[in-house]
Amino acid sequence: MSKIDEKLQPVLDEVLRRNAGEAEFHQAVHEVLESLGRVVAKHPEYAHHALIERICEPERQIIFRVPWVDDSGQVQINRGFRVQFNSALGPYKGGIRFHPSVNLGIIKFLGFEQIFKNALTGMPIGGGKGGSDFNPRGRSDGEIMRFCQAFMTELQRHLGEYTDVPAGDIGVGGREIGYMFGQYKRLTNRYEAGVLTGKGLVYGGSRARTEATGFGLVYFVQQMLATKGATLDGKRVVVSGSGNVAIYAIEKVQQFDGRVLACSDSNGYVLDEGGIDLALLKEIKEVRRERLSDYVRMKGAGAHYIEGGSIWDVACDVALPCATQNELTGKDATTLIRNGVQVVGEGANMPSTPDAVDLFHQNGVMFAPGKAANAGGVATSALEMQQNASRDSWTFDQTEARLAQIMRGIHDNCAATADEYSAPGNYVLGANIAGFVRVAEAMQSLGVI
Ligand code: NDP
Ligand code: 2IT
Image 1 (cartoon, rainbow, N blue to C red):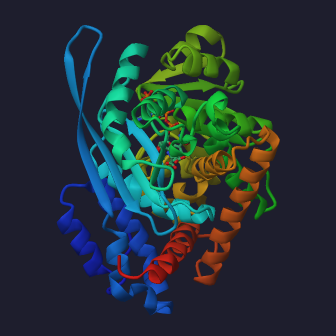
Image 2: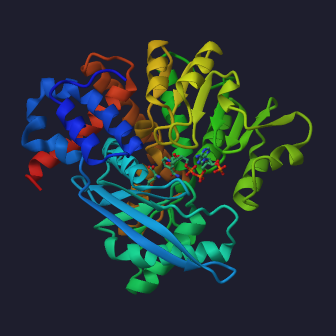
Image 3: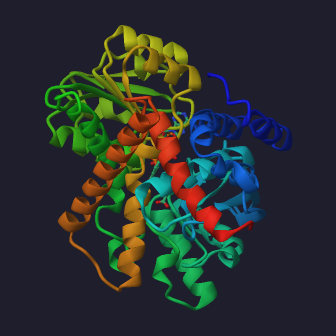
């Protein structure tokens, strides 16, 4: 990572001191502060009243016990989190993650990223994130429901359509949102549709929300390619992960005539030179909720499963990391560059390590950071809130058209901001600065709170 501006170094030092051991949070703050040196040089007023120090400190952090009973009658204890990071632009907004790796530092990094991402969408939403160290793998539907109910029993007192509006993330999809919404409704005796997003279509969800993150990512990549007069047509694409974001990124790449050669899960990757069979992938992951290794067994000839392998060894033109943080390292970046990668678009949050990002920039690879490229999910969540507030429901085409327009706006804003700050083509700088400026202007207006 490059050097931090000398005025901002003490801010980073204080974040490191106060949040000892929270490596992912340190990484996320470091990357943003690295970009802000140029802003405070041009606009010193943004550093007044400890504004940047305040942005780095969550407004509220909630940690709670989640006791529940498993199918064998045993009491299980998990830990729940909600970090309400910044509400200058609107109610806290951001997903809930259920994964055994979840801890406070991970939720804080995600909440911090969410502030700038949500600002970039141009919608009235602040930043927050939540989750639990609950591991859904191998749990029955009844256990998932009881866990979601136990989690919401505590979390509900901190939520509200004008206060904090969660959605899904890793391990939390439509099923879990349904159970959490049901419990919220039962406890509050209010049909407050706008308190959660990612809901099912029959009870207040938005069309295109399920698809939005993956679709939005591919729209962003398409815009980047267009700046070079290129398209996705015929490009070889590799997508890591095989969850919500990955599946709909694959779908949109295929609609644009790109060839998706590989996808993965935490055990290995599938290589299918004929192109990933999306209907089969959806059947395995969305319907049966099975492992990706089943793909090869069901597909037969032409497909290979490489257990424990790195998907970044597959030669491609476009790489879309859509699994989790720090899944693409400097070593992986070196391999991708050697194999001729032209574009990297982050569907996941912070999937590339800082040395990987540096390598992409140094080697002329177009790089789209997650907080810009994956903002289509939360933007469509804000569209869901709009539909709930007006008791309306839009068509798929109308909603997707809004999503495409928002992604074009984010792309153009990041590109123009990078130009303005003398770093053409640097979407990391563009996204961090454009997101920050919107939040900073609101915070200045609201006084020291
Ligand atoms: P899902 O739970 O639907 O899928 C996650 C996928 O990533 C699975 O294939 C999973 O494999 C893999 N994965 C998760 N953790 C790890 C790990 N530690 N190592 C390797 N692979 C892992 O989640 P989503 O698709 O919703 O989320 C993926 C990423 O996108 C996350 O970074 C999330 O924060 C981000 N994101 C999600 C949005 C959304 O709307 N859902 C919006 C914006 C960003 P396995 O089954 O083996 O665990
Ligand atoms: O990381 C993210 O932007 C999400 N998980 C989606 C958040 C949301 O509120 O839709």
